[in-house]
Length: 367
Length: 209
Image (cartoon, rainbow over all chains, first blue to last red; front, top):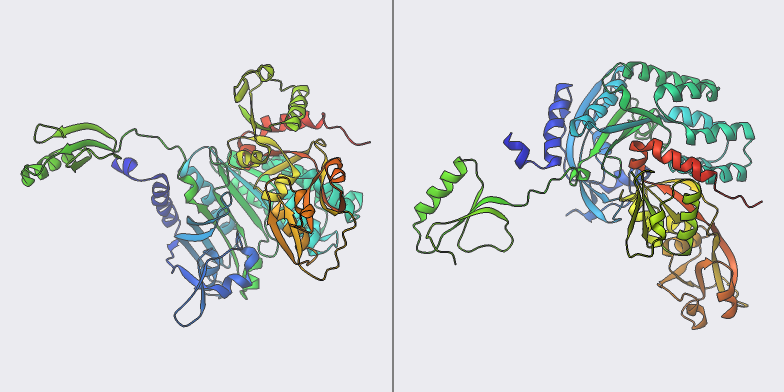
């Protein structure tokens, strides 16, 4: 296929993913590059990084280059009982990138399912997340966890927000030693402490982890949350991606925004997560919505270096001509070469920066 | 194959001997050569020495699956990694030091010289103290002596350098030790291998008591 040579990894992914999302009835969602800065200030913690590029509009209003897509989509959906909107997008966002700590344009594609969502929708989104990863590479891992299970247990400590935030951070780092110290500092009783610490070691196949969770989830809230995780697994266990799913509680997110299932996708060979998503009813509530929502995003810029083969040359043929050469002769030769599926660049002298496979001189002599 | 980034220097030697005792030896590492990478194919492990402050970069970007870095580096750069184990070696503390008899009367901006800009900023921000950060790359102790800064925020091991220069620790910011870290994505695809190393290393950690 010719596209295989022309399209870059990220472009191929966008092409394939659009087809996938369309098949499942998700509609394209196109938005402007700017948004009122106010929207991000109000939901600062929801953003992956809190730095935003701002500028003034002609009327003085403070605008921002979009650091996130989800908030804008929520703003633009109808909030009506029984309604459900399924959309996908492919947008550039601007935010500080993890490893360079500088502003970067990040190509992001993803989908959101907003409204009266039910078990089917949650399952469908999770399945599409797995299928999206599979579209790019079969060697992927999808880690899921459940904020409800974790929150229910964290709430039993009765400690403040600072403690919870700190503990969540340590679980996301799998940092057992500092988590132990934190629990001691806040004098959490040993039974609860043991249960909380076990979240750090809780990862692996859903069958294994769910079995262990049964012993940990004792409050009604935790049991309800665990039940929903079990239902989801019973559905997912029958799909072709059952062996790709792991439960891992280091995939946790801000409790003020996410409430149900949260997940993160990895591809073997890419050092960071390429897909992130979850159920964010809590964010919807903060934005004055009555309904729920779930979605995910894929960071396509990370695919740039993925399985990159170096070709060794830029064009097949370097075609040299001179001032004396008949222009029509040059064009005819270029046409003949391109119709033979060769790439060609017509030049008067050998360019320094172009690597070519063959050289052809229309005048017979090379300068 | 697991790639391990080790910090160059005395700490790195100690760390390697822990790996060795844990059963992940690589004898060629003791050869006096200029080689940068050492491999034990049979054990499926490959070591390389890097500048201590670069370990977290190698691990975060996946060039190394695991590595050993000081907590000071992890706090300063907050890399996206898993911090799996406190090795309880390379122990020291991040501290505020000043000339003997220094008194911070809170009446003016405090001038702070340090290599660890983020740690210093976060520490003083948590107490709402207005500071002026002076980023230095070495010989931090000189700053208060020459009046460049009021205090310094730096790593204190024994305190000898401070004492010899008529400086003293004003307060401790945070205790520091070496940590075993892992790349998040590597952990997903090499879970078994990394867990095996982690478990064997846990057995090598000496407790204080």
